[in-house]
Image 1: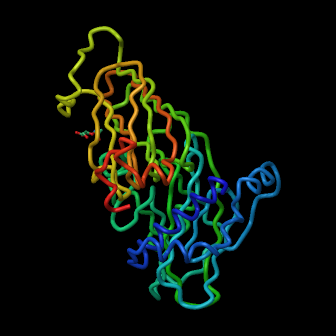
Image 2 (image 1 turned 90 degrees about the vertical axis):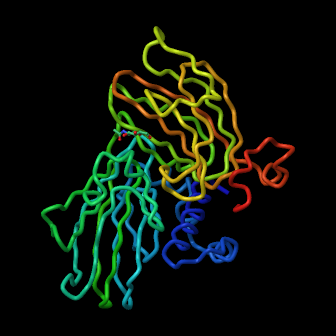
Image 3 (image 1 turned 45 degrees about the vertical axis):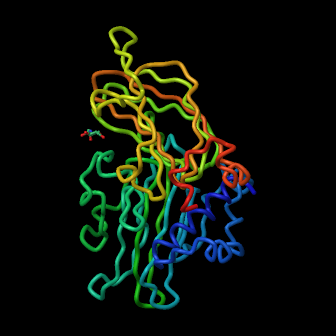
Length: 322
Ligand SMILES: *[C@@H]1O[C@H](CO)[C@@H](O)[C@H](O)[C@H]1NC(C)=O
């Protein structure tokens, strides 16, 4: 399966579970099997590069990783809809409302969220996002077209909508813009390599991989090489100064995930871990005094690795719920 297709399926599952309150992963997996998400295969993505803007209908539950123009038209009252957008790590997403025909007075709704929020869990978490939670929602029914262009603060964004009357709906255009220092990121792929750089900024950055993975931290620089203290890993980082934490969990919100390891001294790797959680996060906490950098590689765990955790030195914290 092309990795992009895997992501579509996986996210669709998460979304379905969140919106419909389902919790039986396997049932949903079957339901998603027939989904025409092959449309988004990486081949198509390549074919489309540099050509006419991609245009298609938006579904009530949808997931998009391509720029383009998307139109939603209700064919019956559709009251619990959401579309998730994801771009490359080094990109922001911009959402333009081209045309909106909804009935705000009649209870219709169209809201953008800066990030993803599923089952009350946000990415980025409130601790890591530059804006307070309320300001991450942009409600079309309040702001109208005065906020026609909305730019996300990271590579994910989301739109919630509710349309009562058949025939009504909206058209939006999704574009991407380069982000020189990606801070919060959800990986589109289950395998990859990334360097998170936080240059003299007092902020926290989380890189999230929503697959069980083996992760290898190959390089970590916190500030200057002079004058640092090497702390015993067993002592943790005491929540002070600049450090990297590795988190595991089964939800989206890094602030609700389990700390698995703290790294608080510059070192040249590798440090490797197998993490059997649905979501693995590398989080860099920065005071702004230094230029911090962490490089890591990750690959999805094979089914046999998850089935036989003991022989594979997998952290077992999350395995029971897989
Ligand atoms: C970053 O995270 C730390 C601990 O997780 C927290 O104490 C601090 O307030 C956060 N900093 C910012 C700028 O949000």
